[in-house]
Image (tube, rainbow over all chains, first blue to last red; front, side, top):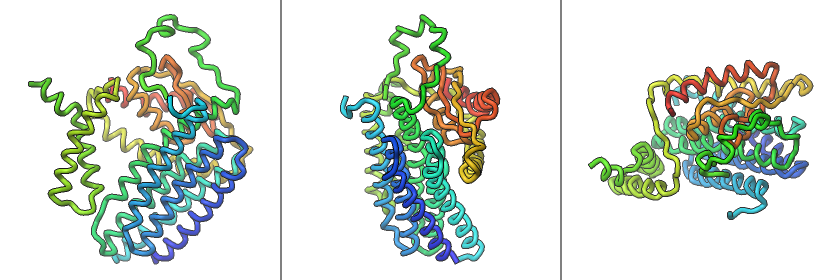
Length: 89
Length: 125
Length: 165
């Protein structure tokens, strides 16, 4: 039963990734794109974890942790660039 | 696996995946940037956090060793989501997407707080 | 004696947190991993002491469990609330801005308050005014601004004021 739940969740997360990809491509302002990229990386973490559950492997955790940290740093750096037009002060 | 635990985990998994989907749906559906900001910061963060919690218990129940490591990712997401939301809102305000709401302090400036260096923000972003 | 202890361990909560995270990150807990986490817990606060210019002073931790329960409950409520607002028709939304007046100056307390506001129903904290007296909050659905300010002040700011004086 839980295999079906994992599959349903993977489909839902896939649709969520497509929706944020749409906003990433379409976004009228640059901040919309940054927000979409942030959401996209968080969804990617969820998909990786679900993949690990589906395959019964724990090796995906490291990739998820790296994506979580990189996604946050990317968002912060892009926001600072928009705020200051400069990354290094 | 224990059938009761299986049902609970399945339900939690589907509900959190639904919330993640709603977060991204809000990103597409709503019309203004500040409205769009609400979906991903709350729904997606909590949805993914719950999926990670389910993953910890799933790996413990399936017979792999019990590792609470996935909770680290949850903690990281919950701590960092408000910070990135705050920075995004600041960036959007600086782009003047919407007319900046007037601060009530601006109308009656308090002379004590204008020039005192003690009030300067220490780690200004 | 006390100053020497301070120079070795500048912040006990930070060291404890680094130690726990170091052990959690390890694949399996061995003696080497515990020693490594201990070394990290001693070295990293020495580095971060030079970065931090305003120390967090914690007065009492008594309101913390109750605040954590309130925040967890509100996060669940926030998800259901936001999902209903997102799925419903957009015409019914009345978004708005509120400047919330703050009663305390501690920057760590304000940071905690801003994070809690972002994670709870329908509100995102956007900006802190330069004199740290007001916090700009965006609400997705704002029928009554004064009610929102009162809720934030009684529900989150009062316990945070006890923790961070």
